[in-house]
Length: 427
Image 1: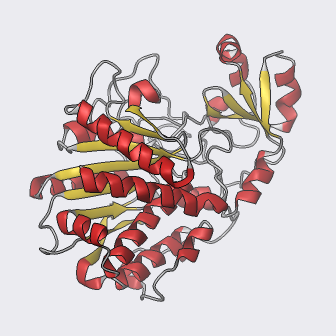
Image 2: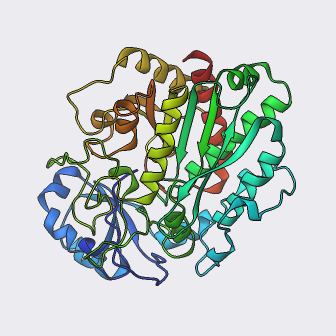
């Protein structure tokens, strides 16, 4: 969920999201981390570069502008000598591949073979994720259904799966999980699908812990909240963040789906990573709830809250290895039940670390990540009174950032599975 002032080839930082169908490869871009004091001192000069801002102190600088950067005499270290090569090595980016293979409704697809763990050995297209949902639901037909909560700006379905145990569907409080609100965060899709796989296979194999959890809660899981942006990140620009909704009067495109929720949307301070500039990667939109994807997920959440209530909401993001409670819009307020939520978060962090020794840090969003408004966890906490409302930032803690090698997908899923088994058994 780190800020990205994304450049299209030779465009300056301020022109990050201008409409372009040209494939962005980032060949030869060098990733550097600048000493914080230097970044603040030379902020205007840095914005003049042909460079991608990967987080507040990390830039990927084009080959043509690297000599200009060196002339600024800043203290820095090189983290990656060729961003384009790292994108190729990650796998999954397919320039020019046909996004048209995806379907407008999962009803158009027929179930195939029940998925295996081999699914988690590589990244996949949106169309493949659609088929995966159909295939895995077919192996749990008595206790699940496919759901479509709405359409994206470009008309793609926002699909998910509803799982339940004894008592029948819609009979228990809801556990609601969202992922891939930010298009480039591919690992979130895979991890959430790993959790779906674990719940279904665990229930089918009569695992006592999984059966107890599914018998207690109805799960509603949306692996790709931002399908348009996700497809664009797979075919055109690996580091695309926002949706693909045009601005009504500006050439820049896209709204940050996690800045457009209609609670404290209007709060923008000098420290806030929410922006009214349509070219910024954290553009909040010209009005709250104007992104159709946000309208779809809020409508769905309200329906769950009106039924049995929302016990747990998690919005999965990457990267930084954090377990974040609301609030994002202010650092001066704690959520109701803060001490209990922090105790649970610490337990989740310990369970995660026990899997592969990765440390995840619990805390509030504003104090432990950065201040931002219009986010989903604040909305879920205050508008629909979710008992627990978190954002989990997945691997890694630093560079490679959004480019997590496919070899780490399974381990990422395994450690989150351990964390969720602790949380769902103790909350």
